[in-house]
Amino acid sequence: MRHRITTRLLHAAVSVWAAFTLSFVLLYLLPGDPVAIMLGGQSGTGTASPEQVAQLRAEYGFDRPLPAQYADRLLAALHGDFGTSLQTGDTVAHTFATALPQTLALAGSALALACLLGPGLAVAAALTRSGRLSRLLLALPAAGISLPQFAVGLILLQVVSFQWRLLPAVGGSGAASLVLPAVTLALPTAAVLAQVFARSLFGTLDEPYVTTARAKGAGRVRVLLGHAARNAALPLLSLLALVVGNLLAGSVIVETVFSRDGFGRITAAAVTAKDIPVVQGAVVFGAAVFTLINLAVDLVNPLIDPRLAQGGPERSSRRWLRPRST
Image (cartoon, rainbow, N blue to C red):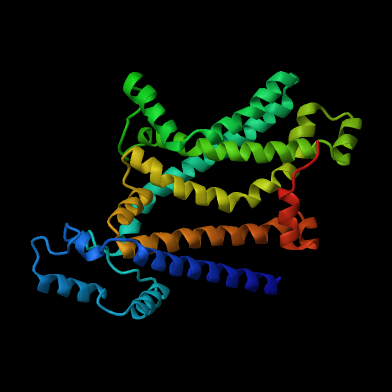
């Protein structure tokens, strides 16, 4: 177990380092000078003199060779220092500390809603005795995945906020302003969870122990919720890291559509302005969250189902992702 934890921690550290390095290379390959953008023009002159431009380059370290810049930023990042924003002059840590509560509230609400809607839809499809209704319910996730997130947000704004005037259209104050963004962010995730859980649930209902429970007289609801749902939910746990990563990525679009000052909107503005410290901090933060959740899931999965530990994590993952025959 100790060897497994050590290996997973090394993999997580390499993943975060790779994300940092890749973001550094990509940001320096992008066209545009961050100092010129900071001064309000692509030429870098604007109203500032060449001496002032050179002073700013030296102040932020852009006049140094690229390997030296990489080494300095990596060393500082290892100590938790991602520098200061080129646009606001505030530290990256304080910028994220200000924005993260809004995004965490949004992502947490969306995750709770998705976990309720997705598995709930699959359970409803399994419980109904109408084959036509069951097929209709199982077709809804495909439609949910195919809808662009920004289109869902704009439709909700138009109908719920502008026509019905039930909820505020923009802003980040109060629980009412959180409803539409959370629904917009949750729908694609709920669709994915519904597809995965439905496939696992219908496969589990064919297992011998479920047949035995039915033979002993267990009712339809008891068989479904008391026997099949627990084992069918294991693939959802494996998807948790991916789901959280998608919610953080989706917050960029949702916070922009609903004008919420959160982590995603700050990241989108930093990419546009080529604000290298903020973008690198956002990439490393997202990679760290993703790898830590993935690590936790890898370690918890065998504790829930000891059979997964017998074939190793790789074989177990392939087992859960393999399509089941119906």
